[in-house]
Length: 149
Image 1 (cartoon, one colour):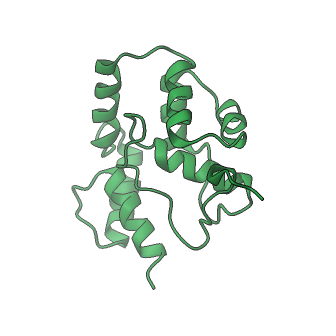
Image 2 (image 1 turned 90 degrees about the vertical axis):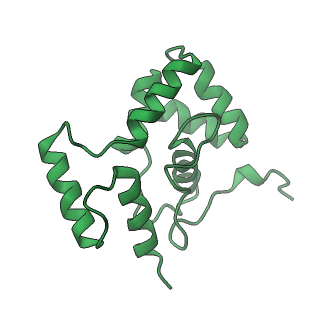
Image 3 (image 1 turned 135 degrees about the vertical axis):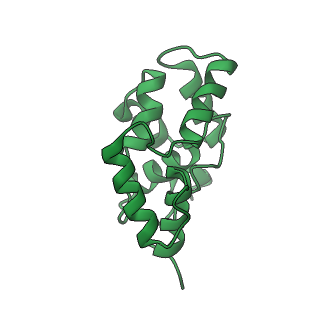
């Protein structure tokens, strides 16, 4: 009998991954990335994508790659162990650097990228969400809309 709760993943065909605002190990998006990774390992990822541009924003910034992350997650590690792995691999980052990165991704509204900003505004309109919302706000609203009962 499998006694390791991390050997299975969420079924993202029936529920959304964690909010990108949920921090794991001091990193925004990491919990969501872990949920999508675990779900992909068990064929339960639904419409979500692991190693997507949002996941890659963390991976590139930390200097790690999605395939290495996925191999580690596949070994059945806990969220805390995965966060420790992220911290100890790739480019070393101190607490101040992590806080700056967290602030940037948390507040990202694509105001520095007109093409992406236009896409985000269209999606926010589709969801009847605040036009000043961030990418994280959009993802939460989209998750909620996708899993309305």
